[in-house]
Image 1 (tube, rainbow, N blue to C red):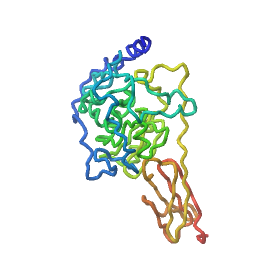
Image 2: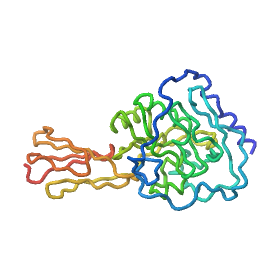
Image 3: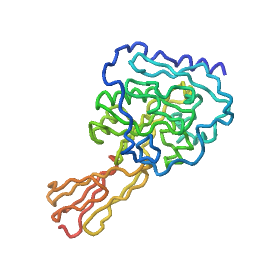
Image 4: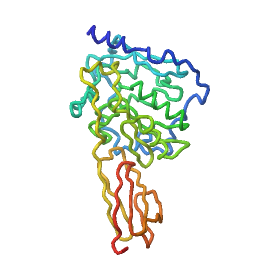
Length: 327
């Protein structure tokens, strides 16, 4: 395994040593308000259709033996942007629940991790960035061994710098935990570069726009959060090793929606949004193209003189239909 140690050593802390500006702003975002939590797990705010598969992902098959650290570290911005490095480990045997799916389309972006953060050996309060602690991006009940990619933490902090306080509702998920909450089999939460984020000072649309401008490979808007992931950025070799293949850009996940008239009201059933109900933004238009009404919600009743109804689902799909009898 000497090649592995060498690769990890080469990928270690050099990325942030020159960035020594001290952030004197708010030392951290407030914890997610449990009162507005839509996840049955009280520490998160994501819309999860379940509470997991029942597997205790925080228990190692041999709890008396901690895995030795490998020769490598994952290096992050740290609390003052001067850098902080955490040791990664390579367990001899991973707990149940870490069966990664085959790489999507053979993409090296979806290769299985080879090293991990052992959350039971790290301080959950450790700041990975000025405003984000380790516990906000990875929690042991979602998998003792976690992947949190440094470049994704940098993008998350950039969003915070631009938009103000953000609540991270969901970060890393082990494959078993992800399956238990209904996540897509190729959900980027399993690769440590995806976050479900609820804004505090701006609306969901502004957060989604900032994610897109910040280079996110996929952005989807839900009722209470925005999913942002950086699937197209090269994965960190500390966690994934070096691939002989070049990066492969992942097409957007398959999603669909349709407009359905229910009396005077309209709904837009949707498929493929695996983290809860997608946000639906409605508009109604006259026959000459005049905008008559705007609405956000699960259903919409357009004005009586409307000729067209349109809906944007999850910030991804735009559907339009003529209102029968309006012409």
